[in-house]
Length: 347
Image (cartoon, rainbow, N blue to C red; front, side):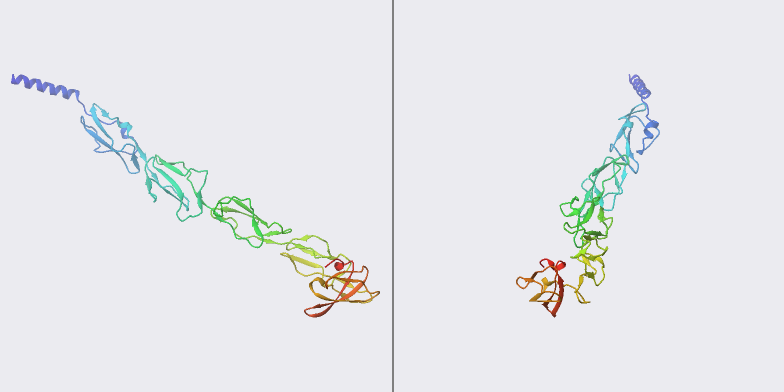
């Protein structure tokens, strides 16, 4: 009996050995990009397990994956479901832009597959914002960032300090804090009410990531109106010259060529008139700016009719010439006026 049992047991073991087989991996498994087989061998015994991992620069989609040899060249789970995905290097971003992931405030050197990063403005940028047309996040897709165009922090520009009466165009888009957004163009113009003001310097500028493309400051140069009693009447731009003549036939003793300089004439042209019977010319004074005696003297002909109102000359008889003696801070000054000329109206 004992010998018979022994023979049967040996036979059973031989039968088991005949149906059992070793396992080996196919080329498809070994060609998985980045795969590393722990205890890599040509042949694995029945029920022997193999641990899968990834080489540097890759990360396993299934961490801690194992496969067992269960039959001749059959592994379970199927090894080809294991994969290694490339990691992504930290993206290159603009100077004022930073990014973070998983709540970390500091960027890492590499990121695993499907790891998401979020972009933001750097901590020292107080008036920056992310562009609206680019997603503020990206994820690592097998070594490539998606999307490939990263959000960029753009810095707003401080409203420029302008000289004199210059204004920037009130239609520009501003942020609540008084800054102008990147890419916004502004136009400089003179304050409303200045006749014919001329911009000296740039007439427009565009905010380019915290700085205007033209940083020179414009200035509004004011035009000049033609002096009273001179022709031609009108407005002359800053820097332009004009040749005036007396509207009522007098002459300008100091020359009639004057230049407009930011609202002021280079000279003060005044008309003078020749007194009948004399060779002298007299330049009229602004009688409205000084105190006067109520006295007049005819230089020729009848005594003119002089009208005063509270020591203020309001008119003379047309066609007559009179000398009016005025009192000023420097003493007595004589002025010759003629009705119909500059001082024929109330002044």
